[in-house]
Length: 325
Image (cartoon, rainbow, N blue to C red; front, side, top):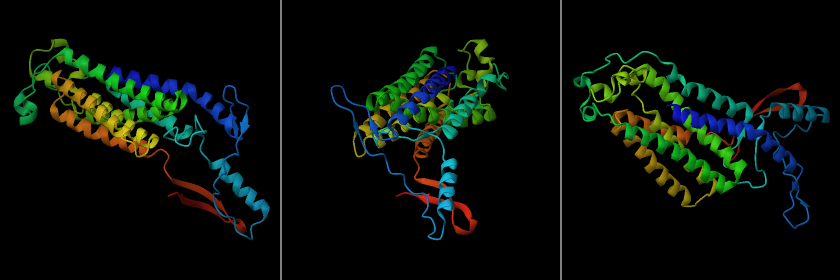
């Protein structure tokens, strides 16, 4: 638990620290300025044309039109766009008012299991008769080597995703998209942490005496369902696949990323079972939740749906749903 919480938190802090630099980079190009390449003279490009929010009424006075524009401007979220020069980079649009709270809440929820201090209800030894036939096959497992391997594999997946995005896009755009990957992992962990605390299911090693007595009497021994390692691994693999699909539309690279990431995430799940930390059903559920969140969270970024204010003649005001296809 501490491994992936610390890793996600470090990524969040690094991304927040670079947000100011990203805004400075954006401001420098907002007026159409393009930094000169080495040995080349500076050149300018036309600034991007803003999409009109709503067509003003022909009867609306210039003052009403300006008021509508000011209202729309004040209602806009604050985007963080590290690299406005390339329309394909970054893959996701981040907003300070949305993504920072999501990362903060996700981090707190991910750490919720750390404050539990009650031991499992059947500690220090549980009766395997209460288990279903599938989970009974791994009851009593205990192997610290496999447990360590699962944590190393998870860190490897996260580090690999970050490295690949930075190499693909550059530092700031890559860090931008890595923040969405971290959001996916944290969101998945937050969801399953609530389920884990509510279920209070004993871990497999409580159904045997191989594990040290201190571990079997510890609070962590009653947190088996679901597997947070598995959720985080599959969320990272799936969200990285979505990012690569946007960065390289129509390329096979995204499917290669999904294949490698999925294989590593599966290895994490297997290691958690072999280490005696989770049952098979814990990891199967974790894989489903992780893959689902890994697809959902990135898909919510850069959505073509927007709600914008509208002003018309006669002092009428309201909201309009804007869709881009």
